[in-house]
Length: 151
Image (cartoon, rainbow, N blue to C red; front, side, top):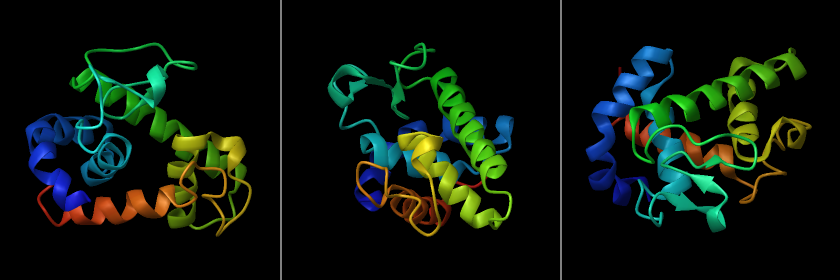
């Protein structure tokens, strides 16, 4: 799926790389989330997804967050990436004994389903809608890293 999304993702590449550099976050990870959440924007209707509950390329849930920027803007990507880094931090605090890779996967799962949904490893995705969210995002991120999404 990441390969199919690549042609669409490339129109956002400069913004993704800029946000990755600004926030010190792996740009490939940002692209992986965008691919998983919206198929690089192709799954959105006027910027909206999840039955009108989520906004933009990174599908920021408007039930808990205000809309920031246009759906495909750098401002939106900064907001979504800030939420991701917050979730990773929450999982680090919740599970300090986990390895950095485990905390990252837990943070990715928390981005999708909230930190309360992450209760154990290796079952970090048990609360995500797909039951495999973090694994899918990481696999997509590896693909994007191998295809030039590196700051």
